[in-house]
Amino acid sequence: MRGYFGIGAEKISKPMNVGSLFRSAHAFGADFMFTVNAAYARRQGGQTDTSDAPAHVPFYSFPDINSMVLPEGCDLVGIELIDEAIDLPSFRHPRQAAYILGPERGSLSPEMIERCNFTIKIPTKFCINVGLAGAIVMYDRLNSLGKFARRPETPGGELEALPDHVYGGPTQRTQMEQFLDTPPDAHYGPEEPVDELVEEE
Image 1 (tube, rainbow, N blue to C red):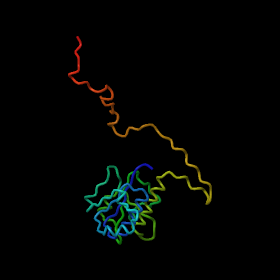
Image 2: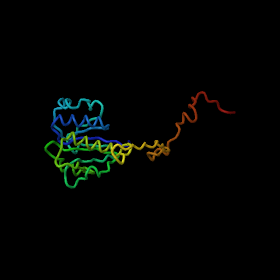
Image 3: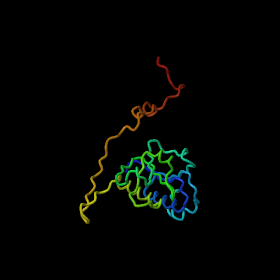
Image 4: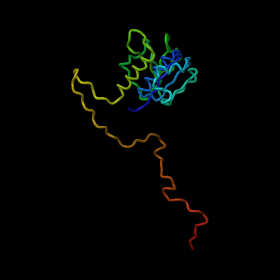
C-alpha cells in the first residue's frame, strides 16, 4: 500500500486510552504516533499497550497546536462527531495522512478543527472510546487503500483472485533527478597525480 499515515490525540488524559490507541496504531502499520497538549501517566499506558508501540513506531509529543509539525504534503484529518464532518464510509483517505482524535469527554478544539484539511465522523449514535474510534478509522483506511480480493456477491461465494502486480517503468520523482549523472571517478577513472603526468613532445 502506497503512502503513509500517523495517528494521535489532542488533550488526552487517560493513559489506558493512549495505550490502546498506540497498540492499534502499531498493529495497523502506522508510520508515526503523536499527542498534542496531552497530560497522562505514560507508565500506566503500557498496561494496555502490550506491544510497546513507542519502541517500534516514532512518537512525537507536541506541547501545543502551534508546535505541531507534520511531514510536507501530509493532510491532517480530524475525527469528530460533528454535523459538517464527512461520514467515514464515504471518505476517500489521502495517501499521506495524519489522523487526530479529541479527548475523553470532550472534542477537538476549534483551533485544531480549523487546522484540519478534512474532518470525518464514524456514523454512531453517540461518541465511542478514543482507542476504538482510532482502530475503526485505521481499519477503514487499510480496507479502502489496501490490495484485497473483492467481497463475493453472496455470503460464502468464491473470492476473486487478485491480478498479478504489474511493475511500471521508472518515474522521475524530483526535477533534480533529470540531471543525475555518473560521478567523474566512475566515468573517467581516478584522477592521475600531477607529478606523474608526462608532457607530450
